[in-house]
Image (tube, rainbow, N blue to C red; front, side, top):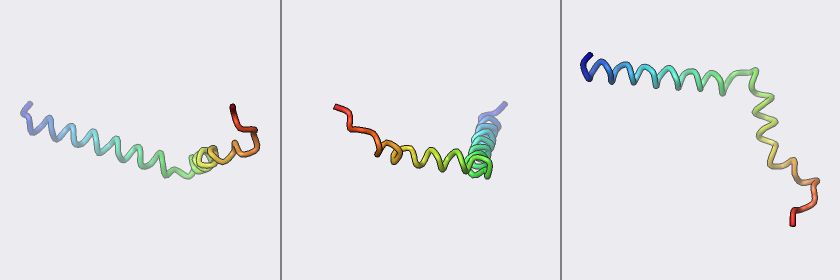
Length: 51
């Protein structure tokens, strides 16, 4: 294999990884989980401060 072929395959792998990550992040099934995770920093307001 030539260097150009290897670079092309590497680019294709990165593109597929990016597309997979994009689909996972913006999946409607994950919205509830990500919304809960986004609120985690604000859920500690009811607890007493740590010494």
